[in-house]
Image (cartoon, one colour):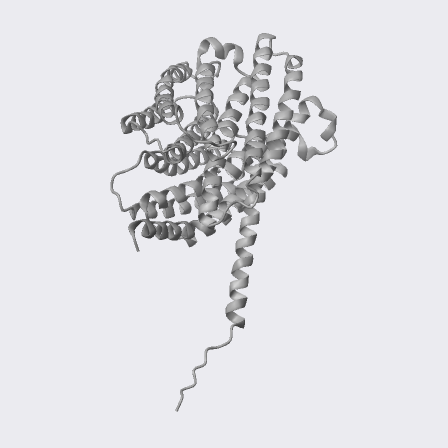
Length: 470
């Protein structure tokens, strides 16, 4: 066997070792994505069609927006990111997935935790803290399952053949440590039987929200982008220094953001947050330099293919980060604070950046782990264009609504027209999201049917003739 064939066989074994845990993670993520976008649409409709759900107490804005946000992050983004991370670690390590049964059990446990959390919010047992609405039982399930997946990922990383770390290693390993740290800390201080009191509560909540939505998603998204974009475009990262510089500056400056300028807290906290917003320009420029050398001149034809997802998501990270830095500036925050602009930036970070990066990665991974093409390959570009147009129609009107709202003295009537347009964007995102679930479930079903046929064939096969001739 020549080296190329040997490498192909090794890659097939590596992909096969990831198949079951990744199918569980991706199938659940696809379902939660649809439900999250559905609840987002319901929450949006309550602003210009309040009578539509007036008879259902469970579908008030407070319930639906909390469920929508949590499903998009905890239901879709995190399990999808964990599946992508496991596969990247296996490929970079050139080793099969370590402890494969552990992430399978953890993936089921994670989806159970999300289900318990949604039930807790619908029953009125939400904690009331943004991005921490899930009750304590759900938080414990999520924390344990994340750690279990991280153990498998780190064990796989320890088996790597090459000792030198690829830039994606830095971002993804940091994300495996980052989430347990911020999630356990926030739940310890806010969700325990003896939570902190007074002004410390919103400070901790702002700290956690920023670290989850901006820093953690940035670590995962950029780590995946820096792996897939050079591979697909055949244009390697031109400078490991820029990647390392991006990594450290993002962690150093990104963690200090999130304190509003008008927050009733000691003045030094909003001041540091505003100064960190200014310094955020440094990692933004570093990411822009890296992406410029990969994307500009890349001879990749992808009419809505995987490369398009990754390219669009990477550019949206830059736009989202610039929006976050602008909102943190005291000059603009006085006008834009408590408006829809902040929500527009958050949704761009989640849907425009993280979702698009993860979708591109999933569509690149699924055919490899299953050893066959996507059953509905034509739906991939359909979802891309629906998602791209949906993000634009959702985020841009929200930002305009916030700007008009701020300049009109926070008059809610100034934003009504633009909120109606943003609902159409959510509808497009929702329609496109069915493509992922349809592809992943169909591939899973075909694989399980194939396994059943093999078992039946083995059971019904005639026994070999073992008689000894005299």
